[in-house]
Image: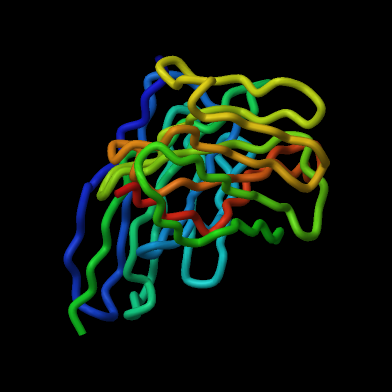
Length: 111
Length: 117
C-alpha cells in the first residue's frame, strides 16, 4: 500500500529558530496536507497544497508541493512556544477521499 | 475553516458495555466522514469511511460488527463500540470531508478518549 515517510521524527530546537520537516512518498499524490496536533486534541489543518510546485504560506508557515508530486515540505520560521506539537503530513490520491498519513514530527521548543 | 465536534470528549465504561461516540459537522454538510483510531505517540489509523445514507466502508482488519457506524444525516455520524474490552481503550478521532473549489479537505474533530475498565 501507499506509505509516507516523514522526517525527522522529532526535533528539539531553541525558540526563535526555523524548522523544516518533509514527507516523501513512493507514489504520486494529487493533494498534500499538513496538520498540527496538540496533546489530547484532533489534528488541525494548517496548509493544503493542490498543484505540483505550489508554494503556499500561512503566517510563519510555508509548505511546498514537490514537482515530482511525491514529496512535500513544511517550514516554520521564528518558532514560538505555541508551535510545540506533532505535525503530520497527509497525501491524497486522485479520485480518492481517504488520506495517507505520515508518522508525524514531534516538535519541542526550549525557551 | 470548518468546525467538527465530537461527543463525548472522554468516556469511561465497563468491559462488556457499549459506547456511542458522535461526530458532527457544525457549519457544513458532509456526505463523507471518517473514523480514526490513534495509539499513544502514533499516527492516525483509518478505521472506516462513513457515507451518508449507505453502509460504511471498513478498512482491512477492522471488525464491522464491533465498531458500528451510522451516518444518518449530512451532519452526523456515530461510532458505537460494542461489547467494549480494555484493548479497545484508545483515542478515537472523526473527520468530515468538505469540498472546496473541487478539492477535498478533511477537518477533524477534537477526539474522544475511551477507557474501558
